[in-house]
Image (cartoon, rainbow over all chains, first blue to last red; front, side):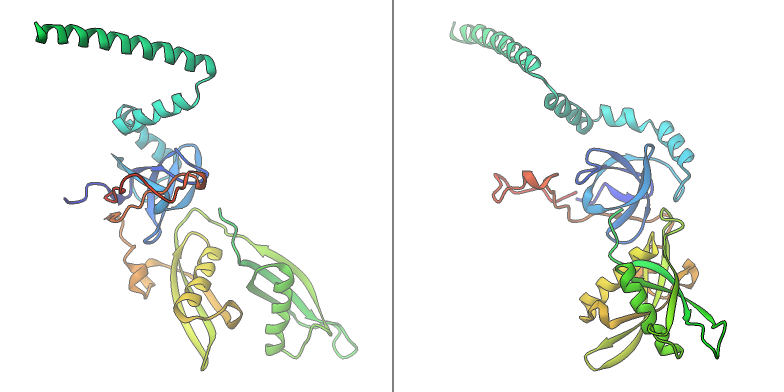
Length: 134
Length: 178
């Protein structure tokens, strides 16, 4: 299969290791084979190794090494934040974060909800079983 | 930014004033060292080879660290160096692409150690310069001078995000494609 996600100027990537873990950054320029200059609206532009980045499907249209303002405008125009939060990858991450931040009372509520859902599923299954037997 | 092993210092020194020479000439040198003490020592080493002055009859007037003016801009650095191999001294010119000069110098030391087995104390930096893209000589730096650069990451090893989550055995083989 050919490659679909390329390292290019304007590619949005997720940081998957290190201090900036979990942040969405934009590849602004390529330093050499292993490093890229990355930028995000709320961080100082810096270099990052590709090993710390997971490329996403999102790409924005920016010139090489844009000014901070042009970067922010381009990200708004391409609506990166919403595209990310509606993608299946983005949604999974949001759910993971929510689950990690539950307190004990929330976990209790989740337990009750799971029991209720299990009960409803089993009722439907029992009904279907009765139909096939009969 | 990761701490650099090599810092750039500017050392200014002169011979001590004496009866023959009331105002000796002041010399300034820019050099790389791991710390200030080593920078001063290197300063006297180089100055001894150029002028008739030693640390015992000279004084360091100032030592300042030089920091990168523009650490967010990618530059092509050319480094001229003199190194000692097992059979003699050689000159070399190397090019590196980096955001800071200290980073490029560190790359240079690492590359000399790995490619030529030259340790850092056998390397003398003659000159460094930022090279505009047109004048770069090495193909390996010139290949990144493309404003529409695009390449796929072919082998994607997935790492656990913290070393705590590292395990020796995994349940299934990882997917290395993107």
